[in-house]
Image (tube, rainbow, N blue to C red; front, side, top):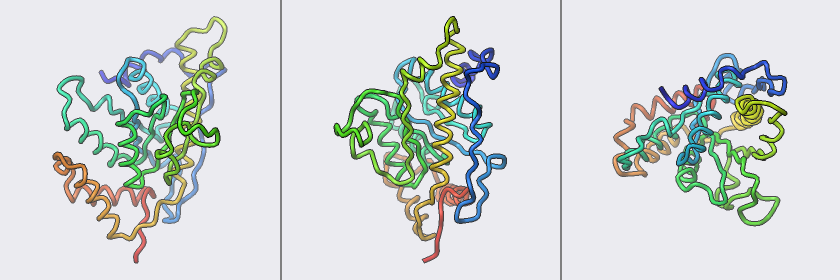
Length: 264
């Protein structure tokens, strides 16, 4: 049984009858420049959900968030968890390659930017996603100050900020917990309330960044960019995606309005 399935089962009895629960997000997104309909009823989008996965708190938190995003969005956003792809032992370059492949093949991504210092692997995956113009949400629930010391800037290293098609969603983790915790309320009900409220805000961020116009790229340049993204990691990564796979991936992303191709 996968981690997400276990997490869902643990909370089955604390669902929608909670009066403090946040409503499902029904935010509509208009058609993009290609005229591709992005209405909630007809399409679903795969989301690579990246972040720390070293402790039980990381693993369960990731699984809960993925499950609630799927449920609250009505299946519009389905998360892919790296922790469900990796082996706990014999960690080799194949783990890196599989993770990067899922970054590339996912429609969108959420990057957990918590901590006084951002997780190095998460930042690498984020920059790889930006190389491919993948719409991203940068999620921070850590209420501590960090970064360059300027309160008007993001609370992390400046080099990870100001990238196109990247939406920052900041949530005060402690405040979210306290506001979700009722008197004599079980921890399961508290978690249900908290993760539903968080999911609504994250889904709004996903909707907003998905509505942003893709970076303009000449049709042939899209192939060049994606081909290079397969070659540049080295260490056997190119064995995971053939040229046919890449072309099919580009076609799928174009059809979903996630990329835009313009003739020179």
